[in-house]
Length: 369
Image 1 (cartoon, rainbow, N blue to C red):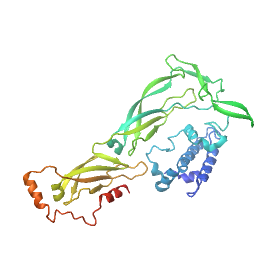
Image 2 (image 1 turned 120 degrees about the vertical axis):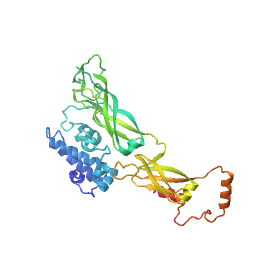
Image 3 (image 1 turned 180 degrees about the vertical axis):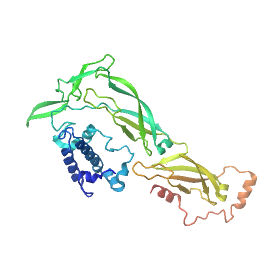
Image 4 (image 1 turned 60 degrees about the vertical axis):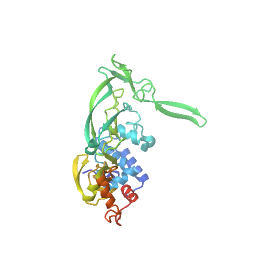
């Protein structure tokens, strides 16, 4: 069972945003890898603290965690502890450490910086069934990797630190500032031996098949991250960038999505509405049969619970809403016209809505509430 995030940071559920931030900073400093070299337990505690703060430090995620616990983030492509490496933690929460920390080894100040390769972005098209059930996609990705035989050496401009320091005279005195080294782009290393088939950074193009696990309930425009499947970095100490997967949802011909709910328009004849009928309708996972009572009204909405999409942030599923539309014929033969003329003033054909029958606007209001 996963450890409670509040226990990890040592704060109560009523702790303020400032108290949570302060508690995380204290834990991060205590278990920082530069203070605990080679200590795997300290590194694990460092990651746990970052995972806890990633949730509790965000009001929206904190609210979901308070309501659903760890299940609020199951399969959502969130932090998840192991999904982030140490460089990810520093890039995301580096401002928490103030001036005491810089990069991966910022505590000691003398270690070499680790650079990160550039991210790659791809677009993946999914049909509604794949979104409802979740899917694994094998995708061919062209990424940059180090060429065989390439070697690197420390950058002379920054002495392997990845940063250059400048001293500027101002009216307030001498000011010192640090910036990314332009010679090595912050990696701390430059190519010393470059194979002829590689680019200036010693990298070559390589096509790789990447398995992307897409959870059920994703939405159009959502982005998922596959860690380490972007371009490799220059140098021996860097890490690969990430593969950013942009979700594109293909429209279904009959089912319309609204959040986790699905909508289906069912057209029936006047005869079917009067007499009642059993109808087969389409769902994402197969057809189902529903029974329509005699005298059903156009505009009635039937709710098939759990036949929608599962939620990313909980175990709940949406519903399939079946909208009943009574089809009025535009042309009638002589016999049919006579029948409806005779029925026009019949008491059974005179509109007589009951108190329980809701208006169109009330139905729309209920649908969106």
